[in-house]
Length: 150
Image 1 (cartoon, rainbow, N blue to C red):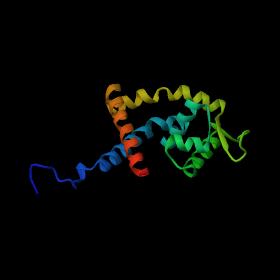
Image 2 (image 1 turned 90 degrees about the horizontal axis):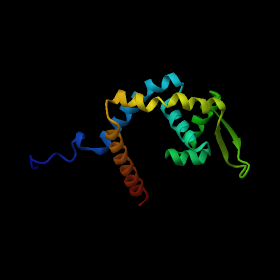
Image 3 (image 1 turned 60 degrees about the horizontal axis):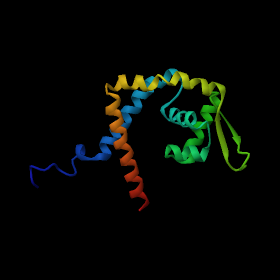
């Protein structure tokens, strides 16, 4: 093997390794910021979707979060137990379960507005750096999902 070129099977050369470590590390950093809000990171993602869309079916939430409905349902159930969301059968489709924010869930958005700034400080990165990283991650997601479909 040519010593000038990196080993293509070296751990540090693997995108999957970098993404996995970055994901675990960032989610752990969010944990400390979200704890005072009473949210876990997955619950925060559900709340972000609902703050943006106001109401959504469990299926729609799963699509927005790139998760299976069976993964979203327990998150929604715990958020409902915490008084942040409510579930009801859709008036348009009795098979669909719609999730909407309670007044307490709406009010929590105001507290959550501090999360992005706190995360910038914890990560020690600029808005521009994180925007570029997020743009690159979005491109990777699109490419990986396209590859999975082919």
